[in-house]
Image 1: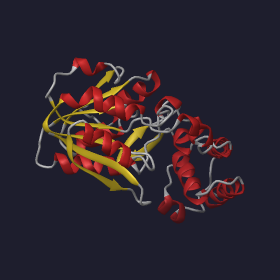
Image 2: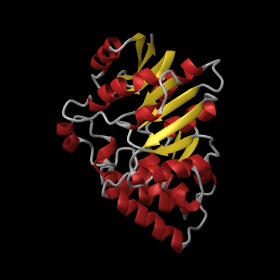
Image 3: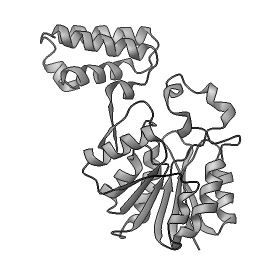
Length: 279
């Protein structure tokens, strides 16, 4: 029965040290059978086919290796938008909603504003801003694997985001000065020396999307120096931040002509996003 298969999946995950075993078991059951939490309660006595049992067992075994749940499911939600995810692309996280929130606040009343999402990955930020902020978005991503998901997600969401495969460290020359209303980025910001100590699940994610150099600030510096003049006066630069990075990034922005700099906290009280306005 469905409820027995769910309980078995949950116990295996729990015994394997998976923290949110109840939630993850529900996700696996729903991905395979189509029965969500409410249906699981209402149809708990429904029989489960051998094929579905095998898939559930396969997903559970893979998760016990600490392979990310999101990769196993192949799809994840960000701000209510469905996104394809898999090997080679950074998994969208709730923390990034703080970054998007700052952007949406800035974009309010600015219909059709021109914006660029640097290091776009799955396209989570770009698609959310195009859909929820009514902005004209260009998403730039260098990785072949991530770009594959970026294009798939634009199509999945019937989005008008323009995807460009290029290196954000060098392609700024292709954008005219004073042409953008908003630049946003969730760049790689983990110190190189800290990469090995990350959670087992994160070890499966692309290092290219995580490695911020020896200090963790390489991409912040490069974006501020290379892209700031692409903003119109009054244009905004928004970054997602790693822990304890707000003060240094704020100083870099201030030194390069940004004012009105402020940060926003995530649910855990960490300064997770920063915005500054170009003079």
